[in-house]
Image (tube, rainbow, N blue to C red; front, top):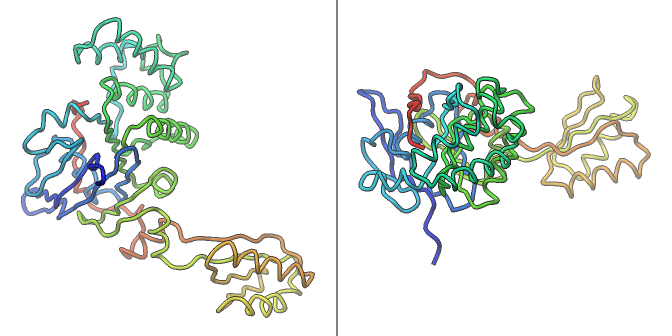
Length: 329
């Protein structure tokens, strides 16, 4: 018998007047995984999170978090989840340590335990050196890490993250990714909304693609990319004189070859690394020098373009509503 999902959405619908922000979205999330809701601004991602975290009541449909129904047992849902919205909500006048202690006291945790937990979380999120500095002196990445640490004070088994890396520089984003991976290794289930295709590709075990309030695709990053077409071998030759001879050789093991003589480039469809290795060996055996050769798979951006006719980063009218600053933790 399979284990119950950590989170389940069951035909969720949310209307704001005549606007249908979410239209019949369903999915299941296994425990200890990172699940991605991927889509552009206004797709309905935040609205789905609001419903699953009991900040907004579904127009119809329901869902469960840690086995508790979001409609009939909202208090139990809140006890078993954490939430980090798009903007960090820490108190900037308090230190990092004081922010964690404050939330611990609000939960009614024993003072000795709070002190131990604060030290542990500050270490876990690489904030020990800044623990006793006011949060207003923190960088954007440090504030985001502190926001996550505060969300974990009650040790929730499920953590919802709405656009967690928005506004972060590339280095801070990579650091936060490592923190999120560590949380999952410790058993936390993460529900991540993002419009960053690379982020979903790097982090998520499973993805639902959302567009205009509907779930239009579901699968692992690899499964989704397979929907956008085959991989290809991309070859750049060292010498223009070898282009035609190389093209003839590649055609012996590929259905078609696209040739660009001006850039000395050949592109041929491939099913995987075995095809790339075969083509590389064929060129080497015939003394054709190569400047660059690689296997290119469709990206998640290619998937989104294939599914919707537009790229994920293209802005749409914003049907999502921001998470309330005082959202439940």
